[in-house]
Image (cartoon, rainbow, N blue to C red; front, side, top):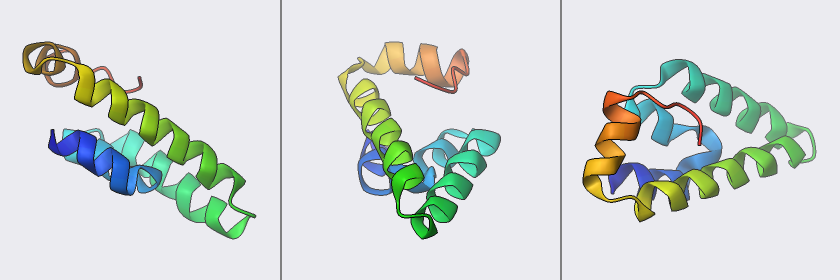
Length: 78
């Protein structure tokens, strides 16, 4: 639940990735989000859409499946 809310609010900064323990992916989203903010916002928009998609995926999965996929299985993207 927390990862989904973070993906909605701060998905363009990759905060939900850091929360789940995916440091490398979080840094990628953070850099693209911040740099993209200064480049007409297009890269930031793309990262925001990724955050929204991941939010939907996080919040629609049952708790057991979420843990199996993202905590135990360490699936980093989508």
